[in-house]
Image 1 (spheres, one colour):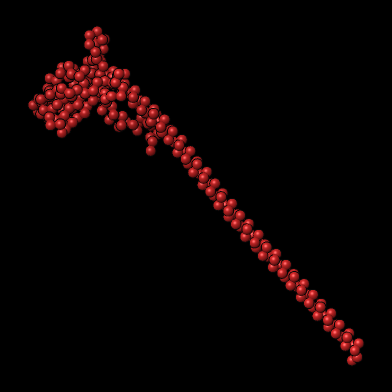
Image 2 (image 1 turned 45 degrees about the vertical axis):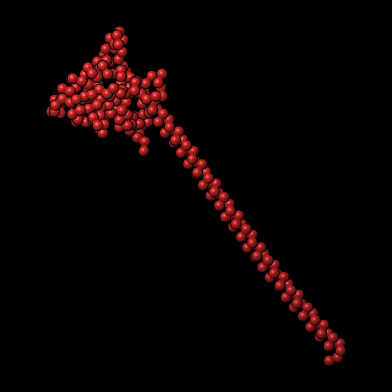
Length: 241
């Protein structure tokens, strides 16, 4: 093999090696490009996932906030409704308390004659209240307290009260001491914030350990508390839970 043949063969080998190198470099470049694209896609998907998770988290926060605000508004509305209902019920109670004054209202002279019906009715009511209190206490001696304005009516009915109680309880007539300390007067414009009493009596055992409060105000309170569910149902259509 002469020099020309050797040179030709060497050139062929160089071209082969160069071609192989170029192909290998191309393969490496293509592989690197693919890996880069895959990694880039993975990074993009990971960021998309983070964004979606963050969006979902914030969406849930907004949803929770809306629910809380709705609940607060609903509770505030319920409180307003309940307050309005209570105001109406209290207005009715105040109106009933004012009506009690008509029951116990009695003056002297000409006005007493005009209001004779109320006067007689209240005297009978005092009689019944005292008898009822005696039947509850079942004491041989009691202390009776009433309004100063009612003292003369109370003294007028005491004998009849003692007889009726003794007959009903089958005991001796009790001793009833009218207390020199009186219940507060009826409510008026001059005494709007002080203690008041619309009428009735308070009886106690002589030692003061047993007390029966039978004033009109106390009876109204008991009846109103007992009938409150019925009143609410009548006014608002259902009994409040």
